[in-house]
Length: 317
Image (cartoon, one colour):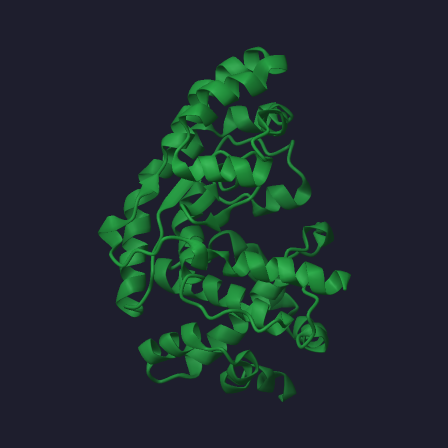
């Protein structure tokens, strides 16, 4: 039952984008970065008196919140500014070093909109959401009724950023701010995918598909490039291990398994396996636009794997 519960929670996260208000036209998408500006106005005062940091953030950050940050604050922190302040003040060197990179997210807006226009060209039925970029204290990103809620401080690496206070997996996942178009395209891709069928295979294909589409649109692999460095060197053994579990309902050896991150082997390798299946399917197809449409609308993940021909490559010597 515990395994089923864990998988159910993951499936809920994967499906949550469907709850957001859908937009058909790129020009109607709001890319809101005001919350980042307000955070940095509050930050100096909070750090001058860390005992009252929660009061400062409540008055100068959350009281001025966008609809996205209001939702994020309630969902992630239950409205508890003290918990949020603790997340910030325990990483003083990191936050002191990411001010410029988080503020630079605003400069990524043209690249993000260009990526969305390209996505709509390739798949006209795509649905978009508003995006709210927040400083979230490493509480993750999520998709909710106001739109996509992106924890900007988790994709804020760059020259001069001090990641020494982060955990191993936080450091490894903390991509450059220039990866933001890829990240949000990945999340938007979930809007048009079909629901997971309850299996590890379905979940891995959905996540790998979002990575594949984001690369197709932006030309980069984004934050998950590291998975491919390891995966390409261990592809056969990964497939052998994944195949043994793929029809089950327990994802925690492959997805959302940050506790398994080591210096030698990254977590989240289900993204890599799912990507490779989608890549094989797309490469094999003569009509690429139709292949993308079929990929995004498939409900039969076992059939999709079979059509991709991916498994067959491992039977060859």
